Amino acid sequence: MILIIGYGSFGRKVANYAKTLDKVVVIDKNPAVFESVDNLDFEYVVGDASERETLLNVNIKDADTILILTNEYVINKKIVELINELNPMAYVIARGIVKYPDLYSGVKVDKVIYPIECAAKEVIFEIEKSKLRRKLMDLERVVNSIKLKHRESRDATTLKNENAEDNGKVLFLIIMHNNPDPDSIASAMALKKVFEKWNVDSDIAYGGKIEFDENRAMVNLLGVKITPIYDIDITQYDGIAVVDTSTSKLLPIDPNNYKIDIIIDHHENGDLIAEYMDIRPDIGATATILLEYLIQLNLTPKQDLATALYYAICTDTNYFKRKTSKKDFEAAGYLQDLMDPKTLEMIENPEMDTESMEILARSIINRKIIRSSIALSYVGRINNRGALPKAADFLLKMEGITTTYVFGISENKIYISARTKDLRIDVGDIMKRAFGGGGHQKAAAASIDLGIFESVSNKESLRKLVEEAIQTKILNAMGIGEGEEKGNG
Ligand SMILES: [Mn+2]
Image (tube, helix red, strand yellow):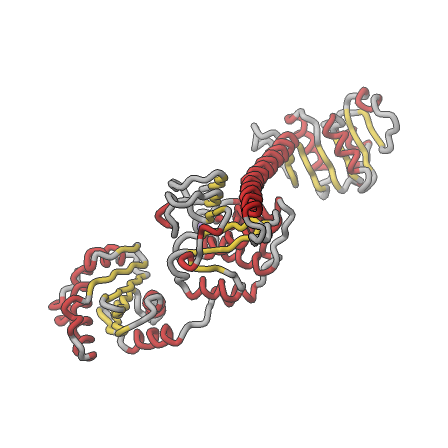
């Protein structure tokens, strides 16, 4: 049996739904509330539920669920006290008031509900939805105006030249920022899907390099088609969209030479402008914004896109440890059912190329341990600089080692990667003072010109010279003198 106390407008609604679930009994002290209802298909009692007699009259012991829905809060508490005594097993739902959060302290209530707040939240949710719908209408309008321009220019060409070839489709260029990260890659993939829905073709381009093994694995395993912007004739495109940046510094094209039509990003203080801009710094990843678009357009992301978007949110929020909004969590939750955990695992732990493996091996073999916790390691000539930070990370896993420096030569420079898990050591500061490099407390890097060492052709002599020069500078910056080190022997 469901017992409802209070038959106001809210109680009436609840009673209506509840009677499909179980037998319903309603109590209200005002007989008039029952008169206005035509066919009452539930039991009711006119009485004051804050009086023991009334509750006993309705066989309160039979009630599994009791709802106290009057808006007289003081009386509600009194009723709860009585119920706790007469039927302690019942599931008690009571109407609360936001102003008095402690209203039910000291009594047992299973659920306090705030009807007005629930309704208000639902309204806000609808407002958000309408805003998103509006945004997508704006985006589609921008795309349509480009379509129109495309058609006009095509008609003009056809008039002049009967043989002009054109499949009639509008072609967009989606540009990611330099050295694209998973968020920009996934966002570009998603925007391509949005364009497809509107019958627009698009290519994805990037500047710089795809730097990390993980990012390369993402592109390869998910079969993402992306092209270096230098291989592309930008003039053949009808429109340009930029994802995951709004800063000209990170863009591989000069915004003074090309008109950008669309920018979707989550970074603050960008200098780029476009006809359509959706920039939301409160969101942890651009992928979250684009997933909203997909859902709004009824486009359920397929497994590859879902995996990409999920990985993008994970990396941009550093696995939800950095700035993460409720929307990012919701997006990740939604994607979890759609993505492929096996592919994700392969992206997160990509196979290492032979050179990286060798550099790792050399960093272990060549390590010099100072003060039993600092490892310095020279790995010689390298092609893949990305292997240095990996080696520095890897050495940190050795027992007793808390700070690592791995350095090697690439072209005519010495590159150094530093890592520490010792909170008293700031490797960013050390790299800066020793070599003018940079980074933060836990991870840093630097590079210096090989200079006069360049003329040294003997491998072994070069090793000795570089090792000694780098070691001296690092130890000095750390405040560990050479002499002192020898003394400690
Ligand atoms: Mn991002």
